[in-house]
Image (cartoon, rainbow, N blue to C red):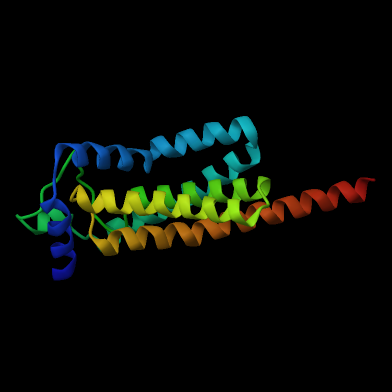
Length: 186
């Protein structure tokens, strides 16, 4: 944990009002605000994705909540007096990061949707880079704000990847079954 404290101290050593506000906004986009925006987007363009995103997010959120209460890891600002909690007040435990779970699921589902539309390799590479940067910034914001350790954000990404893959597989098999039924009725 010593390295993780030093990492957060390093990030907070460069504190400025601009970074404080910027990372709070990034963190907000990686929370329920981003999830609601994505659901609204999917409801407009591809409602199936909205359903499977919400289903996946629900199970991932439940899992991360259970994990937080089972692991009971204190927040960095509660562990070290040298770490400041910037922004909103949080009282729950630290591991895994719920914001990173949310942001990673947003990236996975948005990426899958965009991949279904865009087939050019260069554009797909750009989509992947943009979504990885988005998740990376949310991870960085949670550490900069003093809310999470590095292992908390990595655990959040891990939880989301597992559930994201399962959610996309479920959606794939749903489509496959739906298409098979269409063929049977013709």
